[in-house]
Length: 455
Image (tube, rainbow, N blue to C red; front, side):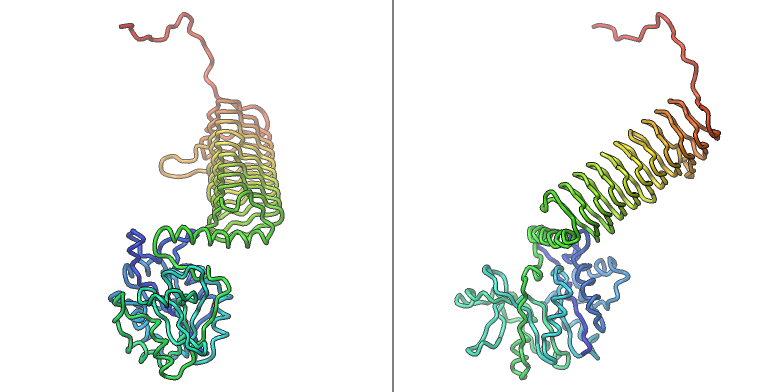
């Protein structure tokens, strides 16, 4: 069957108390709508449609590469009216799956099963039995147990509000009769809106089967209406992400204190301490240890790497056996070699650090290539920026750089060279030998420091 997907994303979300349209509120570091679009794409429909309303231009601008057709609901007159906005694009489809831009946790597996189990030309709807159904539309069944309608919570009579079976919102609708069903919707209800759920009555009147699909895990269908619900959903999302990683072998000190805002993979026996943040695409090799408060963004970490607390690694590759931190900053374009050490308050940017090299204290290494077995003393910096352009520093193998040295790029240091502490290097340093630049030390006897006059 030819299936289209329509994502309803027109709501303003006034209870969010935000200038952002609701579907752009972030979950796991991405707009909620991004999650729904990704899920829809994996279902391989004929077309994906998105209906926007409040802030529609801003919503569409966030997804310039989305393979979707965008529609605008001129006035927010309810979900039925929103779907009506996309009707012109449904010509040629057999059925339409309706999703919501603020319901981001539905899995591909669940929706595939929903599509497979709903008979051709039937109306499918998603349901669950909840212990606390407040706020949800109730499923009304006849004496034979067949679904005869959906009553929204605000329109329920007292005896209907005790019903625990609720409508979760997602629907599969046959396209052929859909225009007539939507045209017949009325706004005579507690909210003054055209409810999409009212098409159930129209479908039954036309002899179409109404096919309920009960979700095994109703948390997949949780939506967002206010910041508290968004925070609750974030915790659900994080638990889901973490479970997948734990199946890969990840160990965590505290499952409640880890945040994943992207795609993370890991090898065996990795350990993560509390308050670690993963952003973007991160890969951990085997036996990686990540200390408390570390942030890893778009990073590839080799086997047996130890990342000490409060280190930031962004857009970098760390080879096996390296040791980073604590309080280190590894910036984009950096490659740290095997068994290298980058220590506390060391910043490395767009540089290659060779195997076994060390910069353990208070240094800045930018736009540099450092060989193997190099020792970079405390307080050393590469002066890579002349105010207009960046220049590179090349350091050979087995070099020893004394503390508080400045290497003014462009400059090259040969293999085996030693640079004395406190030197400012502006010219090529030959291989071997000692190079230093210091003013002669002298003492002025009987010199007195200026002192304040006593009042």
